[in-house]
Length: 372
Image 1: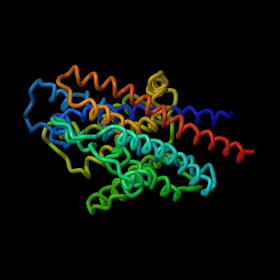
Image 2: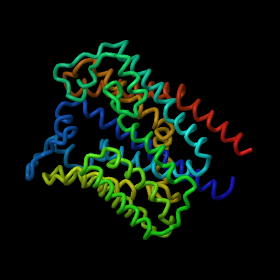
Image 3: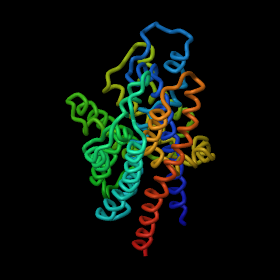
Image 4: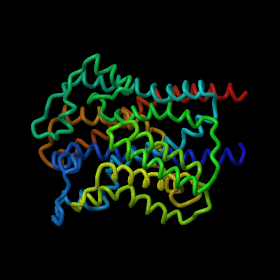
């Protein structure tokens, strides 16, 4: 393996592990959404009033840096920027036909297993509305229908509560096709061009959200990750400081809203996009402390199963609660969390072994043939 190829492999591994950490954050976010107060106050954005603060568990979750551990929306922004960055390499590696075939197989094989698994849970266990359950949890109290099953499989036109996490896959799939505009595109390393690209993409986000153009509001988030290919690597050090700035920027909409100074949804998305770009930029550069931290055991494991974990966790988690019923207290909730984590691990392993791993092996075999 050449030095350049080894460097790319190291960078790719680091980003996969960042994706794994983001997936765990999303799981934590959804676990907390089973709590009615959390679903109402955080899930619906009804945070504390300006100047209103008491030392309660509610306010600790709303106002403290603990939010980093369950910031589901922020984690999704990391997903999108990551995809925008790594897919540029993929689309420039193969022919367009080969890229589209490999990419759609990579995305849809695990989706097929996850949606079928989730449908099986709905068929096997009665998903009834829970008295005292959160609005998010009770939204998953649905009955199986073939129309719902095929809608979630196709996903490009949206999804429903059979697998609520699939809402992001619509944008992931559409960007996987939109990134073809960068096929065989040469990025000239320039900090100036990078800044211009980011500002232009933020403008597109503004226009998309202002005029309620859904795709125009989301696809530029992915392309912001692609714009990182213009940014020279290694010239700007201070990785720790840049990471802190990225995290603060990513989570600033929550912090501002938590103290009663809510920004508009447009400003929220633009700030989170910039923060996610800064974080991904640090993590793509090997040798710094963040990259070394991502090489520890938990990020490695989470990175390997991140896609399968993301796809299957919501159906499994909600099934545990809807079958066991609303907990009577904190101990009951923690018990359900333990059972949910174990069940999610099993579900993610099933999706990985039956959908993700076979598709990856087939793609690798085909790539080996092409390289010959």
